Image (cartoon, rainbow, N blue to C red; front, side, top):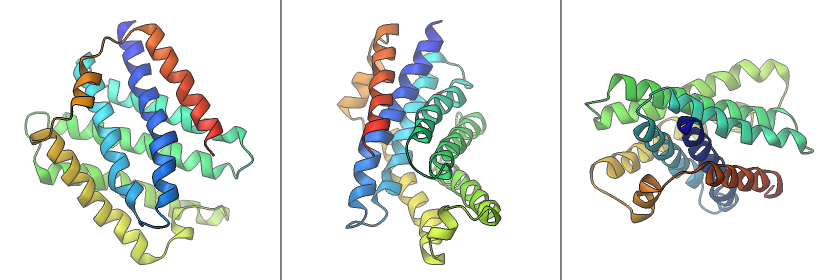
Length: 205
């Protein structure tokens, strides 16, 4: 039961970050192109990694991504094209699979190259998904971007993500993340964070 609330807490925290910081960064990306892509996966990795360390169960990573993806799917209740809610949720699941594979394969040897491979792998999957969706005539990533933007998403964003993640893992220890890591996670706290994340997802749009 304790594991369930760890999953709920970190998944909801990820969903809340997507709904607040992610939304803000996408808004200012008009002025600073790519800024959301530079940092959001790094946050996602940190939340999944903390959940894994709390539970000592690798499958927690997948479960955390499922909670975050479910929060993103609340956008289906909004007056938008369904694909605009479904694709971000699938992207979150791809991120979870990438982190799961990374931690499984490189548990004791987390090099910069392995981190870059992890960061790029889910992006490749997401771009391939967008190509598959083209016949549906629905708005998706590939349709909305040119080749240079797609390559920036695959390479530049992955590179910057990898630098940030590597720095966090090897050098930088932010007090905020240390407090979260050492926090006593109760069922009540998990449910509060989940409720706040859901409200933020539905209202900050």
